[in-house]
Length: 163
Image 1 (cartoon, helix red, strand yellow):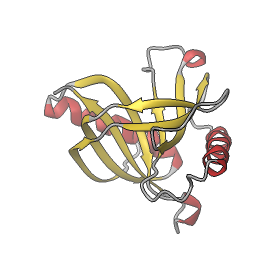
Image 2 (cartoon, helix red, strand yellow; image 1 turned 45 degrees about the vertical axis):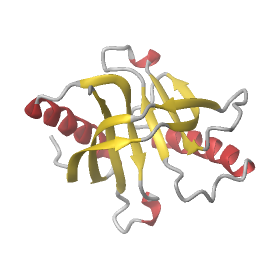
Image 3 (cartoon, helix red, strand yellow; image 1 turned 120 degrees about the vertical axis):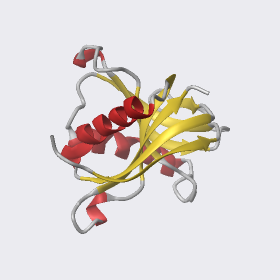
Image 4 (cartoon, one colour; image 1 turned 135 degrees about the vertical axis):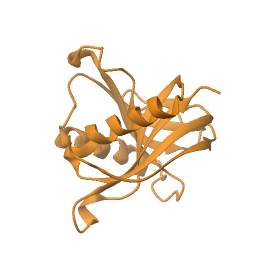
């Protein structure tokens, strides 16, 4: 198993947030071009709404299903946090990321290391005997990897915890 560069793992309180997103059903694992297309499409909408300059906007991928769900039925939602007053369209939907306690692992990784980073998070949960809530599991991206000298992604993996 590859080793990732975990910066830190901590529990954080998050407020409720609204995610403007596109949902995909089907294979996605390791398909960086697919993620690029989805983020571009969502960003086009964000820009058309005049929201791209919001300094608090987060870039997020929500993973709805576990590995137990067949790959062709797994769902992800890719998008950006926005003020709650925006209206969905045929393609861009709105989702609420609930407030609460989240386990947050901060990583600096290459695209091929995402799976290892997630496995490290689940190992941490087992070791610390934490309980995952029914809430969302997602990645919050902190940089543009094309601007990183090593092409690395700076990302927080966030898992909702039971109170």
